[in-house]
Length: 308
Image (cartoon, rainbow, N blue to C red; front, side, top):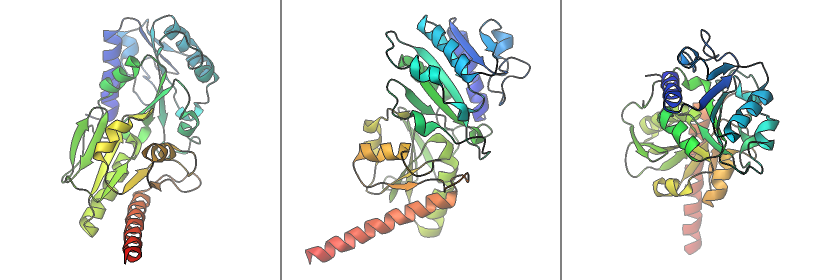
């Protein structure tokens, strides 16, 4: 099953199980079913609760916040998540809310299309807002349920490049294990390097890990958290090795990777996209892993020389 099909099934299940759940967005109604077909069939099945809206991200989120404040469940699709600069999200959905809010804002992002700057960094750390990212290892029904169970507004980033990928797919020799909301992908129990990455970077990370293993004998473990913020540090720590690399689709400075490094309170090497609009490449992750290992070897040799 492709990721987009899994997401569509999850949305069908959510609206079927919750009679007070609404889905709003631009062109989400059939026969269009959303720009990326994530909402296909929903309007036909739930005609009174799937609402196509005018082109106004701020207005859509404002209406959804009102529904959530009234006790309903509201799911918003922002056609292009690059337009996430939503006053309604920060002013009404987050600050000073006296009641639980069952509100999810879905944001298709990335895909190397260059539609906009990518605004994940701008909402990391916003009080009372949880941030998730779709991955091929996390069932979307479970992700949506976890987001709603928090009783606070949540943003789900969906890297468009994942939509056509298969769910739960990692070719041999990799194995995939789930530890709660954390996916753990590796080849053995004693990896040389731990790579932490959000869902949209998974396939590039796996490609880098494969080439490092076959060409250099370097074993990596990949950790993919479903919830990016607040980050579940306790889930990460048992799976960490001595060398840690964070790979993300961001330019340097003030990123999710910086938050990870801050929480871990240890040296972390970053693999980020180059300046400009070029996406993060597999070669960038390889380079970061090798740099991290060289730094560790240098520190070890320096320490040995000092003891002598």
